[in-house]
Length: 430
Ligand code: AMP
Ligand code: GLY
Image 1: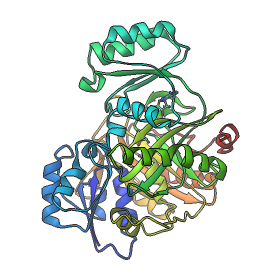
Image 2 (image 1 turned 45 degrees about the vertical axis):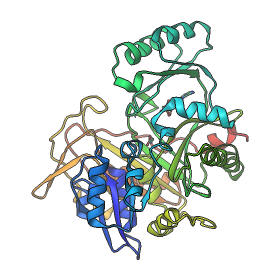
Image 3 (image 1 turned 60 degrees about the vertical axis):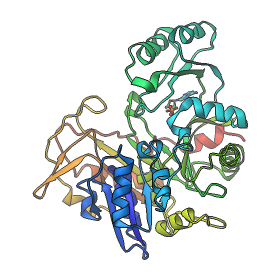
């Protein structure tokens, strides 16, 4: 099989790394890729916002299958473009990707199909109406921009001033452009969060192992939101009862609802769930694999990912079961100084060679190579991932490896996987 991976981050590096282990994988390209991915796949320059340009590349390379990492090309309709040209692709159509591309679409969809989610105080397209709604809410509330804001479009707050200021930034200052034209004000839920992902062919689905990401910049879940600072995956994260509830109340109705609405969903589908006292509730959908969850998951995939993707594109997921070994894994983001604000770029990275002996994988996100030296290119620089029989063991591997690496300004969270995973099962009675 010849495979094309679309994207340029650590998630795509992890996908390429795993696909290469498939005995069926004959050649792998990555577009645009990055200087880390270039060590193990052929990278082809491309612009992720130019779906027809990427389809041109695929038409020339003729891969048997393409898999898309990030949301942007999916929301822009890359799957439709590939389909018109008869090219196989793993990823939802533009219409189905609205589950991530528009939070208003997602909310209305969930209401229509009875999928558990936070109740809304309102969906607004005028700032004055959004401000007025705040007079009659229970705090905390959550204010969400409708469109894609790179993880910066949500505020959870108990402060009317903060909620008002955020609505102003979205709707009046228009900090996120059209993404903030419509706003949702919704109930603030509480409970632990879980990332639950499935691969679906539009009808059947196969679940991936449950995982969790760490979105805040600093230890103890403090500081600003980021694109993700680390993730864990473990067999202990959700009990089988809770997992059944997630599948029956959330996953199945979502896939069936999309099909019923004439927007059949194919590809990876990510459910960002809050495990509340009254069961799992959907905070968000993503139309792709989570990042940095994917980097943790690939470490435990005890199956042929290329063969699985082929089954997904041929509508043949019936009976597919995935085995995960060992029991736990972890991924840790090494970030540039200043991230998630303006990152300090250009510093040389030391120690990458030393990590080779550490039973970890290193996935590149924001690096660039000159000669044989890697330098910092953007905010999330590297991702260190490892698997073990327990989170504690995976943690010690990862942090030993991280200490071998150095660049000026480097920071990372020290508490990924530190808390007990039992908490989720305790509160989330189906
Ligand atoms: P989203 O992009 O919708 O996932 O929101 C980003 C983060 O905001 C989530 O991971 C949660 O931590 C938080 N969040 C979103 N919606 C809610 C909600 N209704 N109640 C509490 N926290 C929320
Ligand atoms: N880790 C959450 C996301 O990929 O959006």
